[in-house]
Image (cartoon, rainbow, N blue to C red; front, side, top):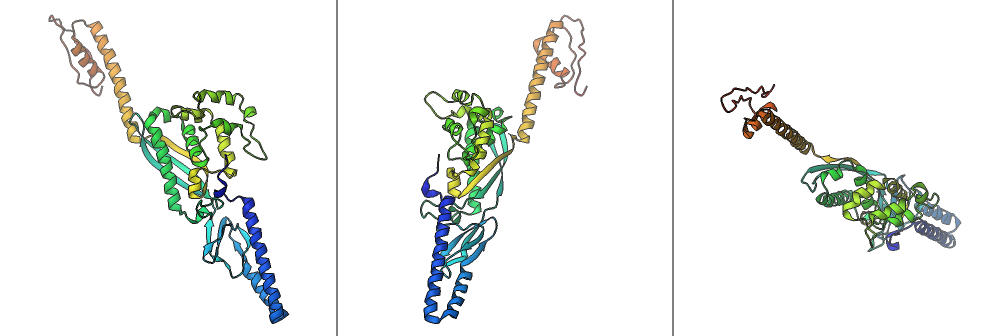
Length: 362
């Protein structure tokens, strides 16, 4: 479950490139100093060395990363915050690419329709930060150089809308209602992992997730792998689409641990590689039918309750007064329920049997 090596610059490789650049800078300064010593004398050589050393030193602000400019192009390593070295008068920090690594939060709000045509609203937060070690596949330079913030936010929003839109077309509003944790972990898994957890899930729960603190799923969640088999169709390693929300809700405990543990690994989803970011958390703030839809559904529920009451009252009238026609009994029941005006009926045969019924507003 590791990302392609040609798209990830590991911390170890980056430190190696930084040391190499620093050593080259020292050799350059030493060579220039020796040359000046023989050509211009010791005093001038010391002055030249001091100038070169000062020019080779630069600092990167906290929570930022810098890619140096060299001969009009970019170098392939990333300078972290703090004191750094560059080739004097060759590398340029001033004209380099300085990028913030601070945690960013974007808010998403959009509407979608469920399978049963209910209009629903989703509100969520995505927390992410730029990862300078994700490289562009074409030129192997840090991806952050090529991507601006608008492209990132538009891309993440489009991804969430696409995933939820597909879910909405196959699930009723009741499938979403009361299952916020399932939807939340499903979207976080899609955005933040090299593949979603519902694809080959056993590998996520069997792997050694953390180097120092191994998550022992078998101990912490007894029977996890056996229960997992219930969600996998025969001869398949992927949870079927119609059970995914149920899967993410059922296994929310271990899935949450997997998602949090993978924040510290150099394993990225396609979206993270595309935008040069780490998706650290997806939080669902609100998920449900819209206020207008809720009112319409409430009206439907009230109408069904009234309809049931009217039919029950009509049956009682027919039982008590056999001479009343079914239509008149129904009309009388509607009046009693406040959905029609009060009406008095005369039983066939001339015998008056007034019906004491409640009209509107009674």
